Amino acid sequence: MLRFKFTFEVSWKVAKQYTYDIEGVDAGSPKSVIRKCREVHLLEDEEAVLALEMVNVRNLTVHTYNEEVATKIHKNFTRYNNLLHQWVERMNDKVIE
Image (tube, rainbow, N blue to C red):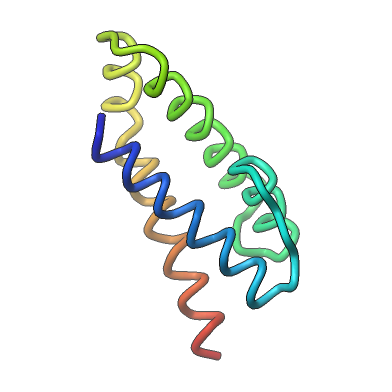
């Protein structure tokens, strides 16, 4: 669960910096960063929904430590992991262009 939290935290903060530096958009919260990433086409609509789900799951992990939350993260880990990789890769690709 800690790996998920740390990875998600780094990913959305990188996206926040990207949207500020490259797109000129200042967003403060994870959900607003995700919405901005969708607007600038770093995330597709379905991906943004999944990323918003990750915010909610991450928030649950901060306040509760129970098996149900851990099971949900584990069940969706592959989807979350794939999306986080794609998200960071797209930012990297756009910076290189």
